[in-house]
Length: 331
Image 1: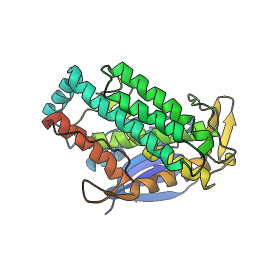
Image 2: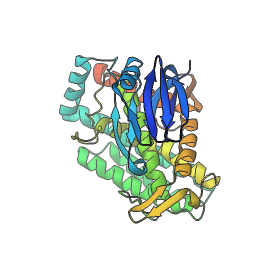
Image 3: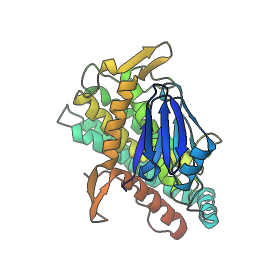
Image 4: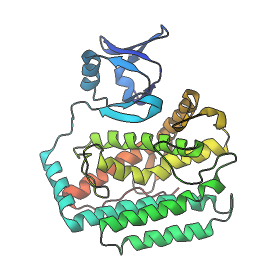
């Protein structure tokens, strides 16, 4: 049975009914969901669940990502890992502690991130307006990556590139959407709300992919390890935000699949409505399942597989020294 991500929005209760998940909503609806069909479970509503439900999810290796009020990402429940390797974690830490090894990995991640930003802007150069100067500035930032010998400076390069990139959004997006500037916690307008929500989805996609390996998601190479975030997931997410989040954003807005009425403006900012979130998630999940022909693998792979391939490439690099090939958009 093919596995897909499943999103729960309705408030209610999640329980176990023999070998299936039972969903009872406050509206009186009951649904049974075969656990074998779920790759990752996303809880967006106010959901009560018990240890029997968690036990079933654990048996089948299904992670759960929990979103709180107005769909802010709150945390995750992870099943017992099938891939466990003390050697992998030791080598991952050694790569972090080794200045040169960490810098090499950080170079690859930042270069791929800037490349994917540049590829998006390049696509719209001449289609929307003239973006040649932005393309050149992004390319110049990428060229500076290899010359940079400090991780803090690398983060500065990426931040500068992202400012150049975000300044292109107002000319890419169809009116009345505008970014003006990137603002979050909370998002201040519709474009910022879309970016924040989609970025959180990319982050959780990367968390799930890393958990399928023996890598520790808390040990990153660009972002400093902290107590409340999975820094390796942040690293990998930076590579895929332009490929996944931003391309979905451009498509939804420019094809008028989402509009201003799909948002709610409150005292604490601008957020997607429930209908808006459903529209965005449908487009995001559809994108994850889309395939592109991989030039190195010589076969069609889904975007979800691209994320997993990226993580496995990093794992091989850490363990064997094999070249790390983060995903750079070629299509």
